[in-house]
Image (tube, rainbow, N blue to C red):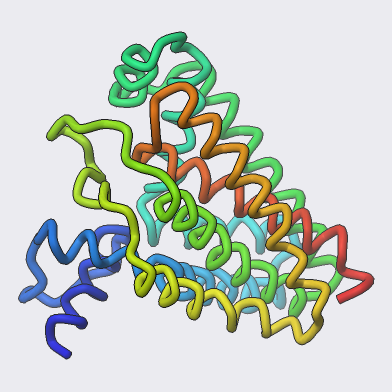
Length: 256
């Protein structure tokens, strides 16, 4: 049990800025196993963002409530996945060889592709969530939770089916290079199911179709250009899947 707690807190420590017990230290073995809790981390962040949105909507207009909820999620993760998305925009936008793409993604500076991509990303999030909040606060809360959990499960699907692309020791996600075991993948799926069931309508299950198509496209694209995925690729996948889920919920709200 203590070892499993270490695995869980390792996931929290790696994927968020939430303080963890002092006895949880860095371990590549635990970090590799921590992937099984990636969607659960989505639950933690989603619930905090949803609670912020619910509390703020009594005081502020929808747009401000949405911005505050997004700010909370960014603060909780340290913009970990958004940073990966920006790096992918720069890398694949400005690189034409595998080596060049990987070099650009390792660069700490953000270029025009990353800035423009991030602006568009947050625009989609803000407008989609504002529209969802205008439909109903409870429906918007359910959508936020599903977006946080389901988007992380989408990244897990890429880790399950593909190999890590970069082998240099400077990679921030190298310990996660191993493919997920069947057991770990099932555990991730178990964290996803409650996020689907909170809608209490079978139509929400169809969200897995666009998520799977997104996963297929991105994994094939990454495989073609760099021979697999990197940590930045997983971050970009999570962010794009987040937007896909919000758009699906927005398009299906009359039926759910």
